[in-house]
Amino acid sequence: MKVRACAGDDFAAVYSIQLQCPQAAQWRREDYLHLARAPGGTILVAELDAAQPPELVGFAAFHRVMDEAELRNIAIDPAHQRKGIARALLAAGIRALQEFGVRQLFLEVRASNQPARAFYAAAGFRLLYTRRDYYRDPVDDAWVMARTISPLIFSPAKSHDPA
Image (cartoon, rainbow, N blue to C red; front, side, top):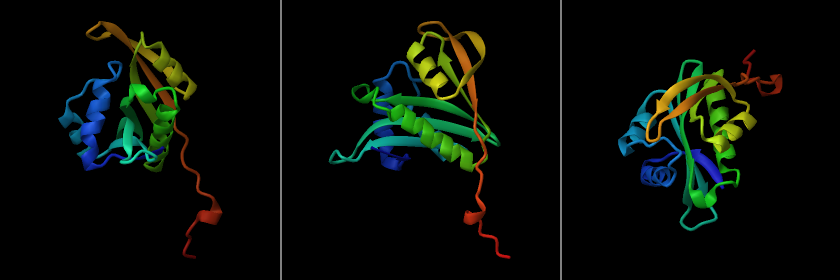
């Protein structure tokens, strides 16, 4: 499996995965296109490269503004859940955000989504506050969580000092 940037022909698969995951935010197709084109928008996909043709099995959508970012959506094809794909997507997203100088990553998750809350806690997110009755269909609270992203540290050996 490899994680890569979402390409133009990936959006149908991204949308299809989302539709199979009711716990994911339910966006319109054009919302993904808009995020991908927006300054600060990043969509990563997980691809099974052993399959021919390669098969998309998950995605993560991020948006950054200055030194903060939000995990807007993440979903894994139900047939491929519990295999470390979400962990790989999140790690790749954090590395990409780190390169842009992002220091804080935020997200919202349904309070009733225990597996997602446990996943995010294991990834270093902490609860900041609760938004009461934030979600509809069904009504549920949102947990707003965040994690700090350490700045990249460049070693002197990798420095390209012209002096």
